[in-house]
Image (cartoon, rainbow, N blue to C red; front, side):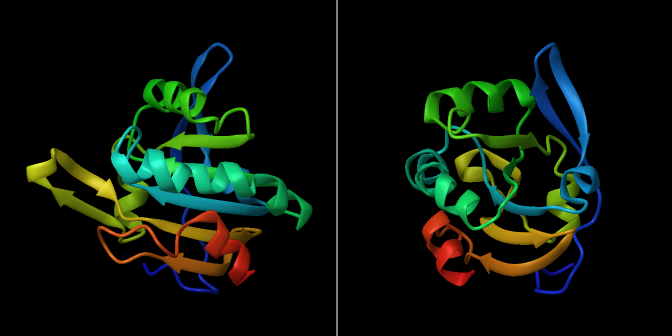
Length: 161
């Protein structure tokens, strides 16, 4: 699949840390009948993910909501335990950003966004992307070139809306 405008995101079972521990979440349920920002990145605690990508959505969260976005979702190839700690340490949780784990990279692979970089210890990780999705259909798509973090940041997605 390509992350092109007009394409419908596939359903996937992702993991989120709930009040009582890990919970499974169906992506289709998150998207159904809603306007949602979905962005993907290689992984929690990695360099640009922690210093550029997630902070850009923390900074722009209120502006997205002012434009009618119901939810901002970050998808990463991590488990929900790591994502919970990362969300707290970056301010993403306080900003109301939902962190969903694609631990086995099934969704990432279905989207054609997977890459592997053994010298960095990264296997089956996600390339960077940012989407505006309305009722499951992509209406804005910003996909970065591998190893870059430019057009998939919050400010660029806002500008493209």
